[in-house]
Amino acid sequence: MADKGLSHPDRRSSDRFPIEREVRYKMLDGKTVLHSGAGKTLDMSSSGVLFTTEQPLAAGNRLELSVNWPAQLDNSCPLKLVALGRVVRVDGGKAAIAIEKYEFRTQGSKAFSAAKTA
Image 1 (cartoon, rainbow, N blue to C red):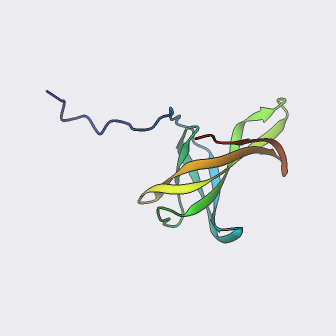
Image 2 (cartoon, helix red, strand yellow):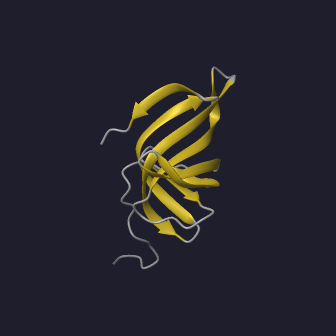
């Protein structure tokens, strides 16, 4: 007999980590920025990010997220994670994106780039 207190099984294929960092986001239409905002990450994985939002977002919106990364390159250069993806879930003042592409940047320059593989 199943425990009624259990929630739906987690369908995510990658582990989530409770990383709380400041995030800036831009809603995109091609290369045009429709609007931007700020929030904080609640949890992250290699395939997605759950974060708080200033304004309501809609599922399907294409976003660019910029997260100040807690680690530094060569213990001296601050890194920023920049991820592109689509909003897949919205719940009040929170949204989740599925990461399609990401890269790490240093103070305005690209340090490392990687595309997410399906």
